[in-house]
View 1 (cartoon, rainbow, N blue to C red):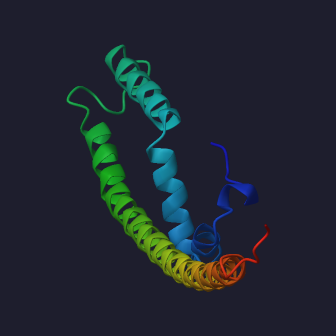
View 2: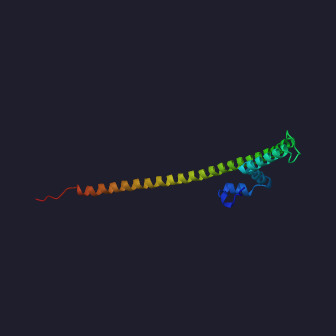
View 3: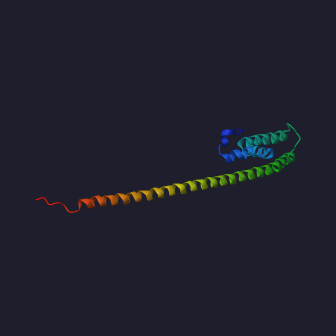
Length: 154
């Protein structure tokens, strides 16, 4: 099973989630990652086939047919797997909540930046409107000088 490296946890929430994890949580994460893999399914299938085949053809005769010892092994595995899966699930829920809170904080920052940009744009538009008014007044003043009485040329 491939172990994650530092580049797998670029996001600050994921780094914090990994770095601050107690030993038990890290063990639960690794065990559940292995139990949820095809490697585990394959290995367990090979073991079960070998167990049943070996006991049926009497290669080893320590667990005869109804395979009570195999059932006990499965029960023990389930008894340990279930709490570990729940622990890992709780940690994933916590990580998801932390990620959502981080995303919400980022969205708040972006919203504030957008408001500042919109306010800056509004101020620029107000200045442009004032300049347009001054330009129009200057044009009227200049045109008014040309529209005044003209000398007679005759």
